[in-house]
Length: 254
Image (cartoon, rainbow, N blue to C red; front, top):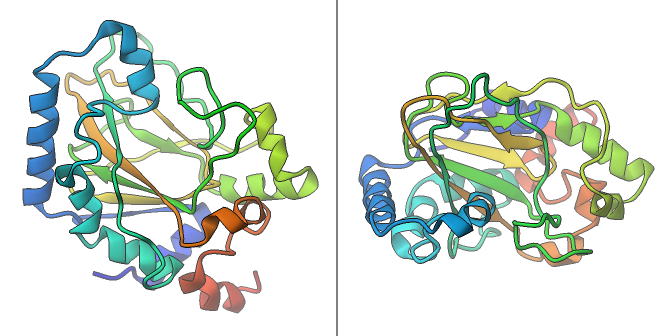
């Protein structure tokens, strides 16, 4: 499985691409079985905010039944086709991201953010930037309408945020999400087994879920080898780590 020219171009222009049918049904079902067995043990009410921000079912998030969604499917090769072959280590775990149905009416609109900066519940220390190369979201259930727990993205926001950090500095993110115009969000529709690949700098959010069903997904935050040395430079040179896109970028004069 390879990305088409059109898919790569969408990623360059919009900061994300959704690729259908990447992860085999057997891997999806195995992960769902493990997650639902975990949920059957009960969820502590006092930890719900933490689990929403970090991960549900932490006891299984590093087990092969979860990491195999990336490591044993074409998702790994698809990311490397853009970043560089042999440069993305195997995943050691993922965020198990569930969106439970809400009775909110109307649902609250999504609010944009990028990952890797401190909030009271996400576990990132204050004063630290924990960024990465790309976010790989793997859907374990279908999302066929808006406000069904959709992953929302702000198309093109990766370029706007790059310019903001060039005008200020990467450390400006430590003051919180920049108050700049990011455009309008898009709520992604997808089916189980589909994969969303997003640039780190793409603003995103989880939407409220007013459907009758739990939305199941996993998110892999992947680092290109040597990323720690480029932690800040990639925020002002957003294509520094994306070797597989360089020919396209040169053609377009970027």
